[in-house]
Image (cartoon, rainbow, N blue to C red; front, side, top):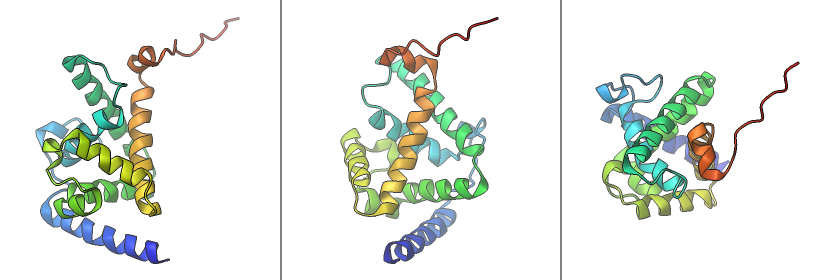
Length: 172
């Protein structure tokens, strides 16, 4: 009960701060093709994806950037097709991570996402993954599942893990 009340209060404060600070609902040319994400989400995801998928992404810078863009687009597409209640929870999570005060308090990442070191992001992800607070573990799981799902659904990822692709269906 305490975690639920504290979590609700924290999300309420973060959402209010994010709205006042312009994190949610802003528009920018970098999100002109987004279905659901806002520019700040793209910045956050672009910082988190390479850390969460460390060793899984292509090594060449050009291919890595293209893969990250595909993952962001897959994340966006997936969330855009979730029920409104789920989208609301993910919006709260992303706003919580985007707002500087809650980013620092809850993740320990002092820099803006675009300037954050991979080691800071890695430490934040490990803390959330093993946190005693279910709210933080749930936040980690949501990021992990959406990011990994967006990557591993892509045929480009299959060769990197030795997966030949789905079997061809027999005709006839």
